[in-house]
Image (cartoon, rainbow, N blue to C red; front, side, top):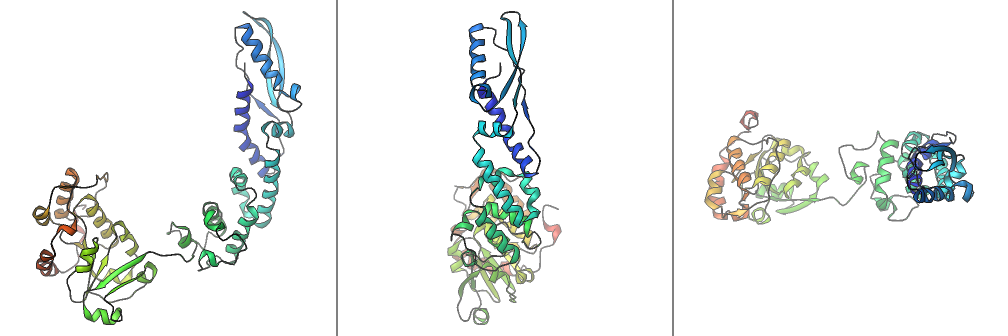
Length: 393
């Protein structure tokens, strides 16, 4: 026989659907629960089940579920009453049973507020009523933010600068729900290529810095105002229109700081997978690029990623000769990448070796004297890589 605990579970599962009906402006429909579970064959246990079901019902409590009984002839128990139907006859019975009266009252008020400000959110509200419940008591402030962005879809301000009368940390604390709703309300104005909240909605934020060194005194004077080592925000860097022939990207700070002078060149401190921040920089598309990472699986995977943005990029000091000369049996980080990478056959050979053996040669273990000696040879290899030079093809 079905028990009160099972009825409670079934009723709670139906509650979200009930909220959806409210959101869709549909009237309450009598709720009927399946109750075809057979009674216990032991008479004492049967009586306990019967009493428990009756005592928790509307007939005993004055609210909640109603039980329609029917008599059946049981082979063991004889003629006994079993539930034919379990139902919540009224909305009040259902809500009082679940103790949701106050929650539903707040939901109705919040629904009215939301739709009065943004009728276009009707479909969202019907689909996700539990999210309305989750933010009960906060919708007035949420709507202040939504109204502001609807009127100013690209603010270009820091979050704390926005002239919205909410707590200073309110927006930071509610980015999830705000993003979900703003993507619907101002869909034509968001930057879908950006995942983070601030750039996605054209807000200022504390951007990452890109650090560069000019390797030519002429470039230092022309672009650095006499300062050799400079840093700037990603957005500023990506907007540059410099004319530089050679650009080196290195992953080790000491190698960045000690990189030898090279005519008409600069070096960038790469920060590993942070190379993705460089992908929209116009002047890099026109320069000859050189990438130097650790000789481990991740180093070649970053090289492949970088080359995906800049097909002309060449690696340097990531060859088999350099690896064999300076490798000290260091262990790397295991890689689970299965995709074919954008590597030349020579690079692919080293990648296969270090990945299979989980080896690593950090670039900082390659002596500065070796860099100075072999860098001129590297620079003689001019011209962009052709797409058929990648082992992928």
